[in-house]
Amino acid sequence: MSVKVKDLLEKVKVDLIYGDDQLLEKVIRTADISRPGLEMTGYFDYYSPERIQIIGMKEWSYLNAMTSHNRYQVLRKMFQPETPVIIVARGLDIQQEMLQAAKEKGIAILRSYTATSRLSGEISSYLDSRLAERTSVHGVLMDIYGMGVLIQGDSGIGKSETGLELVKRGHRIVADDRVDVYAKDEMTLWGEPAEILRHLLEIRGVGIIDVMSLYGASAVKDSSPVQIAVYLENYTTGKVFDRLGNGAEEIEIAGVRIPRIRIPVKTGRNISVVIEAAAMNYRAKEMGFDATKIFEERLTQLINKNEVAND
Image (tube, rainbow, N blue to C red; front, top):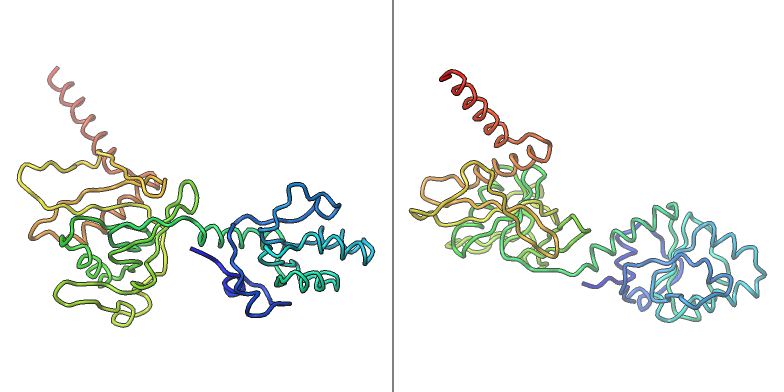
Protein backbone atom coordinates (compact mmCIF):
# COMPACT_ATOMS: atom_id res chain seq x y z
CA MET A 1 0.00 0.00 0.00
CA SER A 2 1.08 3.57 -0.63
CA VAL A 3 -0.25 6.93 0.46
CA LYS A 4 0.03 10.16 -1.45
CA VAL A 5 -0.28 13.68 -0.10
CA LYS A 6 -3.61 14.06 -1.92
CA ASP A 7 -4.95 11.05 0.03
CA LEU A 8 -4.07 12.80 3.25
CA LEU A 9 -5.82 15.93 2.01
CA GLU A 10 -9.01 13.91 1.43
CA LYS A 11 -8.99 11.82 4.61
CA VAL A 12 -7.80 14.29 7.27
CA LYS A 13 -9.34 17.69 8.03
CA VAL A 14 -6.69 19.90 6.44
CA ASP A 15 -6.71 22.73 3.91
CA LEU A 16 -4.31 23.13 1.03
CA ILE A 17 -2.25 26.32 1.43
CA TYR A 18 0.40 25.69 -1.19
CA GLY A 19 0.87 22.90 -3.71
CA ASP A 20 -0.06 21.81 -7.22
CA ASP A 21 -1.12 18.45 -8.66
CA GLN A 22 2.49 17.33 -8.95
CA LEU A 23 3.29 18.04 -5.30
CA LEU A 24 0.08 16.33 -4.17
CA GLU A 25 1.27 13.17 -5.97
CA LYS A 26 4.26 12.87 -3.63
CA VAL A 27 4.34 9.50 -1.88
CA ILE A 28 4.40 9.24 1.92
CA ARG A 29 6.60 6.24 2.72
CA THR A 30 6.59 6.17 6.52
CA ALA A 31 3.94 6.49 9.21
CA ASP A 32 6.42 8.27 11.48
CA ILE A 33 5.73 11.96 12.03
CA SER A 34 8.25 14.61 13.02
CA ARG A 35 7.70 17.70 15.15
CA PRO A 36 11.01 19.52 14.62
CA GLY A 37 12.42 20.89 17.83
CA LEU A 38 16.17 20.55 18.08
CA GLU A 39 16.39 21.09 14.34
CA MET A 40 15.21 24.65 14.83
CA THR A 41 18.27 25.28 16.99
CA GLY A 42 20.50 24.03 14.18
CA TYR A 43 21.00 20.40 15.33
CA PHE A 44 20.36 18.13 12.31
CA ASP A 45 22.49 15.07 13.14
CA TYR A 46 19.49 12.71 13.47
CA TYR A 47 16.97 14.59 11.40
CA SER A 48 14.58 12.49 9.27
CA PRO A 49 13.49 14.64 6.31
CA GLU A 50 11.44 11.79 4.78
CA ARG A 51 8.80 12.18 7.50
CA ILE A 52 5.75 14.43 7.51
CA GLN A 53 6.72 17.61 9.36
CA ILE A 54 4.10 19.07 11.71
CA ILE A 55 4.44 22.63 12.98
CA GLY A 56 2.54 23.18 16.23
CA MET A 57 2.25 26.16 18.54
CA LYS A 58 5.65 25.58 20.19
CA GLU A 59 7.50 25.25 16.90
CA TRP A 60 5.63 28.18 15.37
CA SER A 61 6.31 30.42 18.37
CA TYR A 62 10.01 29.56 18.34
CA LEU A 63 10.21 30.38 14.63
CA ASN A 64 8.34 33.62 15.20
CA ALA A 65 10.94 34.71 17.76
CA MET A 66 13.70 34.46 15.14
CA THR A 67 14.77 37.14 12.72
CA SER A 68 13.42 36.75 9.20
CA HIS A 69 16.86 35.74 7.89
CA ASN A 70 17.47 33.05 10.56
CA ARG A 71 13.93 31.72 10.17
CA TYR A 72 14.39 31.31 6.43
CA GLN A 73 17.80 29.61 6.84
CA VAL A 74 16.44 27.08 9.38
CA LEU A 75 13.34 26.28 7.32
CA ARG A 76 15.37 25.98 4.13
CA LYS A 77 17.60 23.40 5.81
CA MET A 78 14.66 21.61 7.40
CA PHE A 79 12.65 21.34 4.17
CA GLN A 80 14.22 18.80 1.83
CA PRO A 81 13.02 17.44 -1.54
CA GLU A 82 12.22 14.07 0.07
CA THR A 83 9.96 15.72 2.66
CA PRO A 84 6.42 14.74 1.57
CA VAL A 85 4.43 17.58 3.13
CA ILE A 86 4.45 20.28 5.80
CA ILE A 87 1.37 20.59 8.04
CA VAL A 88 0.72 23.61 10.23
CA ALA A 89 -1.66 22.93 13.12
CA ARG A 90 -4.11 25.10 15.11
CA GLY A 91 -4.89 27.34 12.13
CA LEU A 92 -1.66 29.25 12.63
CA ASP A 93 -0.52 31.80 10.06
CA ILE A 94 1.90 30.59 7.41
CA GLN A 95 5.08 32.62 7.71
CA GLN A 96 6.37 34.08 4.48
CA GLU A 97 9.77 32.41 4.94
CA MET A 98 8.05 29.04 5.33
CA LEU A 99 6.14 29.51 2.11
CA GLN A 100 9.28 30.59 0.28
CA ALA A 101 11.33 27.62 1.52
CA ALA A 102 8.51 25.19 0.61
CA LYS A 103 8.33 26.61 -2.93
CA GLU A 104 12.09 26.31 -3.40
CA LYS A 105 12.19 22.67 -2.24
CA GLY A 106 8.91 21.61 -3.90
CA ILE A 107 6.87 20.72 -0.82
CA ALA A 108 3.13 21.19 -0.32
CA ILE A 109 1.88 23.03 2.78
CA LEU A 110 -1.35 22.01 4.50
CA ARG A 111 -3.07 23.70 7.43
CA SER A 112 -5.36 22.22 10.06
CA TYR A 113 -7.41 23.91 12.77
CA THR A 114 -7.07 20.82 14.98
CA ALA A 115 -4.87 20.80 18.10
CA THR A 116 -1.36 19.55 17.32
CA SER A 117 -1.40 16.38 19.46
CA ARG A 118 -4.82 15.35 18.19
CA LEU A 119 -3.85 16.05 14.58
CA SER A 120 -0.68 13.99 15.00
CA GLY A 121 -2.71 11.09 16.41
CA GLU A 122 -5.23 11.19 13.57
CA ILE A 123 -2.53 11.22 10.90
CA SER A 124 -0.53 8.45 12.61
CA SER A 125 -3.63 6.24 12.90
CA TYR A 126 -4.49 6.79 9.24
CA LEU A 127 -0.95 6.13 8.00
CA ASP A 128 -0.48 3.08 10.24
CA SER A 129 -3.56 1.45 8.72
CA ARG A 130 -2.72 2.39 5.12
CA LEU A 131 0.99 1.57 5.22
CA ALA A 132 0.73 -1.64 7.27
CA GLU A 133 1.82 -4.79 5.47
CA ARG A 134 -1.19 -6.69 4.10
CA THR A 135 -1.75 -10.45 4.20
CA SER A 136 -4.41 -11.98 1.97
CA VAL A 137 -6.47 -14.85 3.38
CA HIS A 138 -9.21 -16.90 1.72
CA GLY A 139 -12.62 -16.54 3.30
CA VAL A 140 -15.62 -14.31 3.93
CA LEU A 141 -15.42 -11.49 6.47
CA MET A 142 -18.74 -10.53 8.07
CA ASP A 143 -19.79 -7.94 10.62
CA ILE A 144 -22.17 -9.83 12.92
CA TYR A 145 -23.68 -7.84 15.77
CA GLY A 146 -20.63 -5.57 15.58
CA MET A 147 -18.23 -8.54 15.72
CA GLY A 148 -15.76 -9.18 12.91
CA VAL A 149 -16.17 -12.87 11.97
CA LEU A 150 -13.89 -14.50 9.38
CA ILE A 151 -15.61 -17.51 7.78
CA GLN A 152 -13.17 -20.00 6.29
CA GLY A 153 -13.37 -23.57 5.03
CA ASP A 154 -12.69 -25.87 2.10
CA SER A 155 -13.55 -24.67 -1.40
CA GLY A 156 -17.22 -25.23 -2.26
CA ILE A 157 -18.35 -25.80 1.32
CA GLY A 158 -20.70 -22.81 1.22
CA LYS A 159 -18.86 -19.84 2.70
CA SER A 160 -20.30 -17.30 0.27
CA GLU A 161 -23.80 -18.77 0.53
CA THR A 162 -23.56 -18.53 4.31
CA GLY A 163 -22.42 -14.92 3.95
CA LEU A 164 -25.45 -14.19 1.75
CA GLU A 165 -27.80 -15.77 4.30
CA LEU A 166 -26.23 -13.64 7.04
CA VAL A 167 -26.76 -10.51 4.91
CA LYS A 168 -30.44 -11.46 4.56
CA ARG A 169 -30.58 -11.78 8.35
CA GLY A 170 -29.48 -8.16 8.72
CA HIS A 171 -25.70 -8.47 9.07
CA ARG A 172 -23.06 -6.78 6.92
CA ILE A 173 -20.50 -8.23 4.54
CA VAL A 174 -17.00 -6.78 4.45
CA ALA A 175 -15.20 -9.05 1.99
CA ASP A 176 -15.80 -12.23 -0.01
CA ASP A 177 -13.26 -14.73 -1.32
CA ARG A 178 -10.15 -12.63 -0.59
CA VAL A 179 -9.73 -10.72 2.66
CA ASP A 180 -6.79 -8.34 3.03
CA VAL A 181 -5.80 -8.29 6.70
CA TYR A 182 -3.21 -6.31 8.63
CA ALA A 183 -2.21 -5.79 12.24
CA LYS A 184 -3.57 -2.43 13.37
CA ASP A 185 -1.58 -2.90 16.56
CA GLU A 186 -0.13 -5.82 18.50
CA MET A 187 -3.58 -6.97 19.66
CA THR A 188 -5.91 -5.88 16.85
CA LEU A 189 -6.35 -7.53 13.46
CA TRP A 190 -8.17 -5.57 10.77
CA GLY A 191 -9.66 -6.74 7.48
CA GLU A 192 -10.88 -5.15 4.27
CA PRO A 193 -11.80 -6.31 0.76
CA ALA A 194 -9.60 -6.22 -2.29
CA GLU A 195 -10.67 -3.13 -4.23
CA ILE A 196 -11.75 -5.15 -7.26
CA LEU A 197 -14.07 -7.28 -5.07
CA ARG A 198 -15.56 -4.51 -2.89
CA HIS A 199 -19.29 -5.13 -2.20
CA LEU A 200 -19.28 -8.16 -4.53
CA LEU A 201 -20.23 -11.74 -3.67
CA GLU A 202 -19.79 -14.86 -5.81
CA ILE A 203 -22.53 -17.47 -5.64
CA ARG A 204 -22.00 -20.70 -7.58
CA GLY A 205 -24.73 -21.14 -10.18
CA VAL A 206 -25.75 -17.47 -9.99
CA GLY A 207 -22.48 -15.67 -10.57
CA ILE A 208 -21.25 -12.40 -9.09
CA ILE A 209 -23.80 -10.21 -7.33
CA ASP A 210 -23.48 -6.63 -6.08
CA VAL A 211 -24.61 -6.81 -2.46
CA MET A 212 -24.92 -3.05 -2.10
CA SER A 213 -27.17 -2.74 -5.17
CA LEU A 214 -29.41 -5.66 -4.16
CA TYR A 215 -29.63 -5.19 -0.39
CA GLY A 216 -28.68 -1.55 0.19
CA ALA A 217 -25.86 0.34 1.89
CA SER A 218 -26.73 -1.16 5.28
CA ALA A 219 -25.69 -4.61 4.01
CA VAL A 220 -22.02 -3.72 3.41
CA LYS A 221 -19.08 -2.40 5.39
CA ASP A 222 -15.74 -1.19 4.04
CA SER A 223 -13.57 -2.63 6.82
CA SER A 224 -13.85 -4.41 10.13
CA PRO A 225 -11.76 -5.85 12.96
CA VAL A 226 -11.19 -9.59 12.69
CA GLN A 227 -12.01 -10.92 16.16
CA ILE A 228 -12.94 -14.55 15.62
CA ALA A 229 -12.49 -17.14 12.88
CA VAL A 230 -15.04 -19.81 12.03
CA TYR A 231 -13.86 -22.81 10.04
CA LEU A 232 -16.52 -24.84 8.21
CA GLU A 233 -15.76 -28.56 7.87
CA ASN A 234 -17.63 -31.39 6.19
CA TYR A 235 -19.20 -33.60 8.84
CA THR A 236 -17.94 -37.16 8.62
CA THR A 237 -18.70 -40.09 10.90
CA GLY A 238 -16.08 -40.54 13.58
CA LYS A 239 -14.77 -37.01 13.35
CA VAL A 240 -14.68 -35.38 16.80
CA PHE A 241 -15.88 -31.81 17.27
CA ASP A 242 -15.89 -29.68 20.41
CA ARG A 243 -19.28 -30.01 22.13
CA LEU A 244 -18.70 -28.12 25.38
CA GLY A 245 -16.77 -25.11 24.11
CA ASN A 246 -13.67 -25.74 26.21
CA GLY A 247 -11.43 -26.84 23.35
CA ALA A 248 -9.68 -23.51 22.80
CA GLU A 249 -8.05 -23.16 19.39
CA GLU A 250 -6.28 -20.17 17.89
CA ILE A 251 -4.83 -19.14 14.55
CA GLU A 252 -2.21 -16.49 13.85
CA ILE A 253 -2.65 -13.99 11.03
CA ALA A 254 -0.23 -11.11 10.44
CA GLY A 255 1.34 -11.77 13.84
CA VAL A 256 -1.94 -11.51 15.77
CA ARG A 257 -3.63 -14.53 17.35
CA ILE A 258 -7.42 -14.87 17.28
CA PRO A 259 -9.71 -17.70 18.47
CA ARG A 260 -11.03 -20.20 15.92
CA ILE A 261 -14.13 -22.36 16.08
CA ARG A 262 -14.64 -25.43 13.91
CA ILE A 263 -18.24 -26.00 12.82
CA PRO A 264 -19.35 -29.25 11.13
CA VAL A 265 -21.44 -28.80 7.98
CA LYS A 266 -24.14 -31.34 7.10
CA THR A 267 -27.56 -31.36 5.50
CA GLY A 268 -30.18 -29.79 7.73
CA ARG A 269 -27.88 -27.56 9.77
CA ASN A 270 -28.54 -23.84 9.55
CA ILE A 271 -24.93 -22.67 9.52
CA SER A 272 -25.76 -18.94 9.52
CA VAL A 273 -27.71 -19.30 12.77
CA VAL A 274 -24.88 -21.31 14.32
CA ILE A 275 -22.35 -18.63 13.33
CA GLU A 276 -24.60 -15.95 14.82
CA ALA A 277 -24.69 -17.91 18.07
CA ALA A 278 -20.90 -18.36 17.98
CA ALA A 279 -20.39 -14.58 17.60
CA MET A 280 -22.80 -13.76 20.44
CA ASN A 281 -21.25 -16.44 22.66
CA TYR A 282 -17.76 -15.03 22.04
CA ARG A 283 -18.97 -11.54 22.97
CA ALA A 284 -20.59 -12.95 26.13
CA LYS A 285 -17.28 -14.59 27.10
CA GLU A 286 -15.47 -11.29 26.55
CA MET A 287 -17.96 -9.72 28.99
CA GLY A 288 -17.35 -12.45 31.57
CA PHE A 289 -20.34 -14.72 30.88
CA ASP A 290 -19.01 -18.18 30.05
CA ALA A 291 -21.73 -20.83 29.58
CA THR A 292 -19.14 -23.63 29.63
CA LYS A 293 -17.90 -22.59 33.07
CA ILE A 294 -21.47 -22.33 34.33
CA PHE A 295 -22.18 -25.86 33.10
CA GLU A 296 -18.97 -27.20 34.67
CA GLU A 297 -19.83 -25.54 38.00
CA ARG A 298 -23.32 -27.00 37.95
CA LEU A 299 -21.91 -30.40 37.06
CA THR A 300 -19.44 -30.22 39.96
CA GLN A 301 -22.24 -29.21 42.35
CA LEU A 302 -24.38 -32.11 41.14
CA ILE A 303 -21.53 -34.61 41.62
CA ASN A 304 -20.83 -33.29 45.10
CA LYS A 305 -24.53 -33.43 45.96
CA ASN A 306 -24.78 -37.05 44.79
CA GLU A 307 -21.68 -37.99 46.77
CA VAL A 308 -23.18 -36.53 49.94
CA ALA A 309 -26.48 -38.29 49.29
CA ASN A 310 -24.72 -41.65 48.79
CA ASP A 311 -22.81 -41.20 52.04
